[in-house]
Amino acid sequence: MSYYSMGYASIIEDYITLDSAELERISAACADSAFQLLDREEARFTVSQEDGGFTFPDFYYQMSVPLFSVRIYEPLRDMLEGCFVKKALLRDGSSEVPYMLVLPPRIDALDIRKSEIIENYGTREAPLYELGKTALRKDCAGRYHLFKIKDALDDRIFVTEAFKRRAEALKAEGAAFWEAETGE
Image (tube, rainbow, N blue to C red; front, side, top):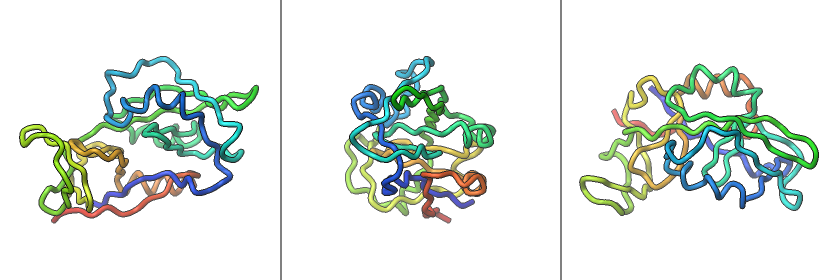
């Protein structure tokens, strides 16, 4: 099975930027996929008036907080098993744009033999890896289509090829994909 890293194409200057102070409140929980630290109430974020552009992308990822536009969330919804999902509103002046916060689970996906471990900040029993080259185990995702790597410091989001194909068919603005290495 093929996997891809899904990132935010933030280099496009037309895309909005959110106020970082509001994102900081949930950033640590999102980075760790610590669902238990997040409430189910609608999240509210303010669009920065100083930074960014005017276009609301379909996928937004800043400070470990992944947001999907409602336009792509609905057709991808059946592929989000295991994810923590809650409504979010992005306020831009007097208007509010609905989004969904979609936080993937951390799963045991790392092919330790083929990955480059820069440092282990944890213990042998409870590792916390800083990764260089990252390789995923073949067929590691099971029924999940969207996930992060357990025991890793980075907060990259990985997706299955099926998820990538559907997001590309939807022309999901803001989403960029890079093929991930997998072990044999």
